[in-house]
Image (cartoon, rainbow, N blue to C red; front, top):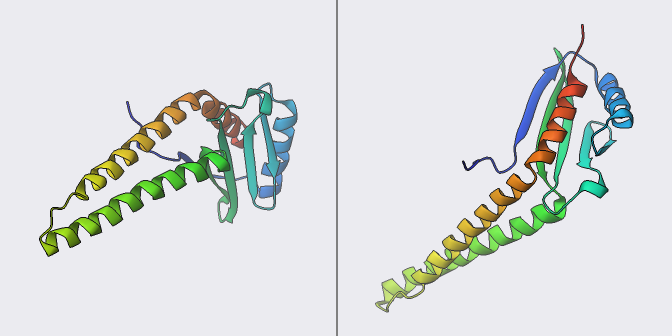
Length: 162
């Protein structure tokens, strides 16, 4: 089944403070048996798959921590490596630009009474969009196991024992 989520997310609120969450992440990173590495910043945590197990479609989990009344709000977003994300955004923009400008040119052709051959380019651009989307879905499927590693690791860290 096709997943229509381009970049899956996690959201939760934990009663732990940010300092405790950072300490737990660092502790769990040092003692995990999964090939995960991470970095912590001021209000940001980044988890990646260890380079030995990384491939082109390996996910990255970026987590933002915010103080709220109940404790700490944790918002995370899975995505590909930044270079892969940039490449896909370039291809999406290119396909959309082809469709838009070909459509505009086709409307001008129609208005002037000429044959509107450029509408075929609109279909080409839409076909490219579909191919890019399918490639992204295939990539998500290839990175699904590693996404589960990161998700289970994050869930384990954020589990709060009273």
